Amino acid sequence: MQRDLIECELTDEGPVRRPARSAPPRKGGRSITVNLAESPLTCLHSRGHLSDVQFAAGEALRRDWERAQLAPSLTMRWDAVRVQGGGGDISLSASERQLSARMRFDGAVTAAGPGLSDILWRVVCAGETLPLAERALAWPVRSGKLVLRLALDRVAGFYRLV
Image (cartoon, rainbow, N blue to C red; front, side):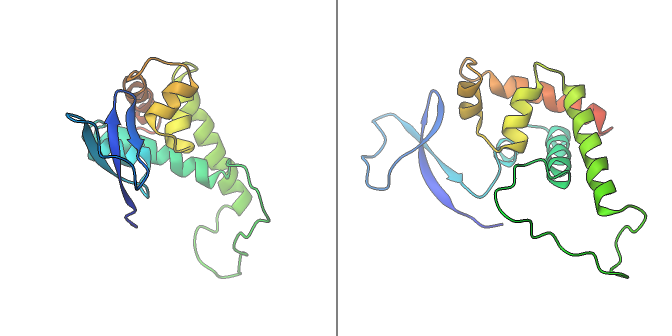
């Protein structure tokens, strides 16, 4: 995994990126080193805020999101061409695998519930940090972590990880 490390000031709203030539953190302020190449989910798990099961549930949801190709495409599709005898799972066509992933993703989001699916999608699929997701949803500061953990617990139940 690529490591793109930056130093961020730790504020009440979460880590805030400082410009390279800015003043050092205020006296008594704290800073944190952030790897820009890792997902917010990985960051939370590595700091002990998510259990292994919650992390696995989030990764399963993200994997289904990507396999279902639900992200908006902006350019031409460069998917690999299927070659006869190429191996892999030949019991399902590419579109069937995509549909299956879409059904699993929809089922997992439904299992999370309408109040929890918003933060789940923003952090796990869109890759937003918790402070950004909390602001976008107009939630109080530091409430997103608790709600995300509840959502991941429900998704773990859907994927039968518990």
